[in-house]
Length: 114
Image 1 (cartoon, one colour):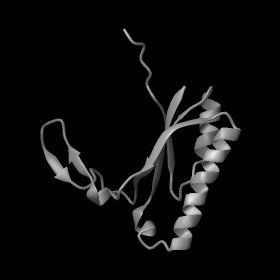
Image 2 (cartoon, rainbow, N blue to C red):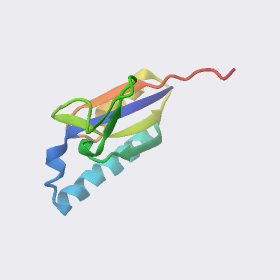
Image 3 (cartoon, one colour):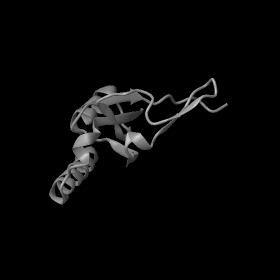
Image 4 (tube, one colour):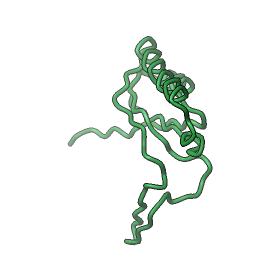
């Protein structure tokens, strides 16, 4: 079963990080990778995203706008795609995910190839 762990946080905190805080944050991601390996969770991929102010939103009706679609205090800052054998293990991974805000867990739709 594949899942997305979406990492949300307050972007204003990251802009004031010192080198030491950045290093500590990176260590939390390394520790999460270790935790996953030790607990039967495979990380398929993951990335940090640029700030939401660099986003561009495209609507189905053809309109486009710069910036995030919603004005929220916490913005999507990164993600992990994981694979594991149960929802419970995926939930445990989400609880261990390195974030200073909220974490959202969603199962990835896997369709059978025709």
